[in-house]
Length: 317
Image (cartoon, rainbow, N blue to C red; front, side, top):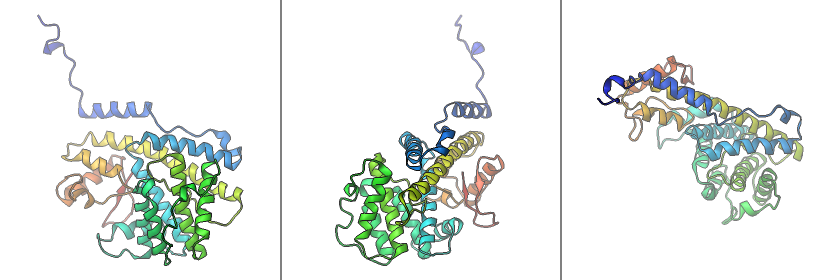
């Protein structure tokens, strides 16, 4: 008699049990670890380098939710740039300007700024120069041909953040730009140089999101970068936890296209029900079916509705 007959095989675990096991494994293999408490008393330059090392580990691991982190940093960078340019839009209004505007329509000056930062964050770092040229044009002035050539070689400082700030300053100094416009462009250039120095495939907008302009002492600028790097790392910890909860919750739903829906949610800052119905997305069928899928995930505590309004809702981790 076969000792491995059907009567002796363990029962197939339920969908909910499989999801619980997956969530348990995810908790035991956390990528993001808390930062040491002593960083609060360290010199800003040293502390910033230490935090960026932790962020670098996350970027190199390339978790599924990295795109969410990348685009949320782009949103923070766009909001910081908007303040430099004296626009009134905050993060929520910039998000709406992008998502409430149909493809091809004009999202307004602030919406265009946010889209430039989104585009910048998705480009390979070695090809991000065109984003700098696009930003100069959007800001109302033109850079000379080759203005950004050799940008990543413009500073010889061995420390990545110092090199990024130096290269950006020297680049923008040669352009005829106003204070706010120059600061916004310098911030994008600095994040590009930082990505190249750290060997990242794509930029992660840390310096720009910190609101670091061309003015202020070195210590003041490092302090801003440190605060934003710590905020970025803290957001990564939160996103890792929320992503694990989303994957576990979605595994309990008997919905066709749920896996693609989860992938779409992990690939952006927020999505609408309509986003999940477009070609190449979650194939959840109708807008109503996609909305039910998203709202069920909200009920399970695996997703957040980000707008607090009754119509055209946006959902994200």
